[in-house]
Length: 223
Image 1: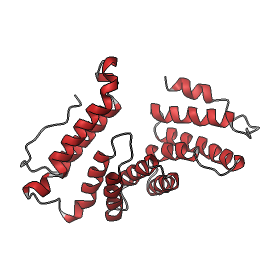
Image 2 (image 1 turned 60 degrees about the horizontal axis):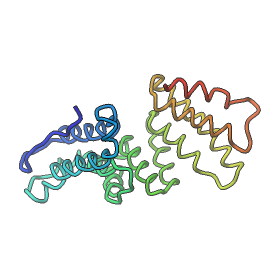
Image 3 (image 1 turned 90 degrees about the vertical axis):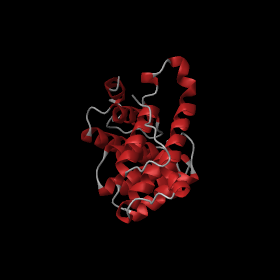
Image 4 (image 1 turned 120 degrees about the horizontal axis):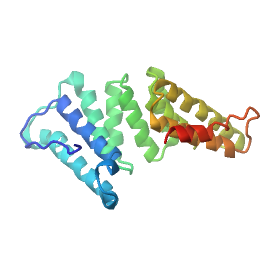
């Protein structure tokens, strides 16, 4: 169900075609264990990388090799976003992904998806300040669960001293709660909230209000 469609190098593809393949690539990555035996788990990164390379060869290298024109100028930002997202699918930082996604947000600053993906690229670099800026900008343009939960996780890694780190953890909890308000059934957001509450529990300055008490409930909700 998650195999990326094949095509010849000379077959013209629309941005919709590209997006379908990139969506299938991320489904393969995110649901690999659901559709493969546990014995194949160690092959996940290799399989995903192979599908990534097929998409790059089909959609993003054909223009140079076969003379196919790029998408219309009005949609070129989307093109760079999809290329950057493809390059960013792996666990390691890719400078090519950062470059493509940076172009995407310059061409279309309103693209929340591109800002989120660029933030993830900086996170892998790791450049936590830039990642925080990207997620903050995306959430400011449109409240969405991806930006909020990513902000929650990044904030827990920031802070120059114990007091600042504790303040960030408190913010992290609220951001995770905000993500759940947008998508109450989203398991990832519940997991992020549970981890944020556990971080609050173990922080150096726990709050007197007992905000850490629901941590077990949040983790249980995600099961």
